[in-house]
Image (tube, rainbow, N blue to C red):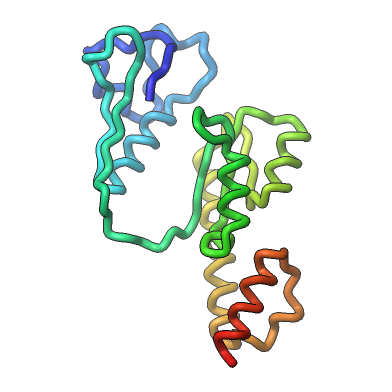
Amino acid sequence: MKSDGNRIPENLKNKIFEPFFRAPDTTSITGTGIGLSLSHSLAELHSGTLKLDTAEKQYNSFVLELQLHQEKHTIQLLISDVMMPEISGFVLCQKIKTDLQSSHIPVILLTAKDNLNSKIEGLEVGADAYISKPFSMEYLKAHIENLIENRKNLMDFYSSSPLSHLKSVAHSQIDETFIKKTRRNHQ
């Protein structure tokens, strides 16, 4: 990915991935200095790397390298920015929430868009939480823990009595399709 922001000096190529570090000439730009640090940590969690490409002289260019085939883990939660270059967080969330294989995954949308219409749009596409920037890490962590714990409690409850409470649950069309498929498989 490339950024046309202020060029990052080569001598800071490793320092920029430290939490809360901001280059000296970026003090007038809104930010907290956690984006690159978080991205770097996430890349490492997936056995990958995130580096500043110092060969690129016109732009800040970052290279993300991930293994093509990784050990598949169950996705428990997804955090996405709303404003991304290829696909918006709204579209990504809508795709996740309308796919039978992924509709159960909680989605947290992060955004600088703090207006009411954006919050409503986030909820309409199925986001479980909509967090405005800047935010505290404790606040984000509390949302993550809450959503994962709630999903775990639901799984525990329905695994102990998988079919008895289906009619009492509010659900969407995707949920209805899943319920019908489950009923067919258990008959």
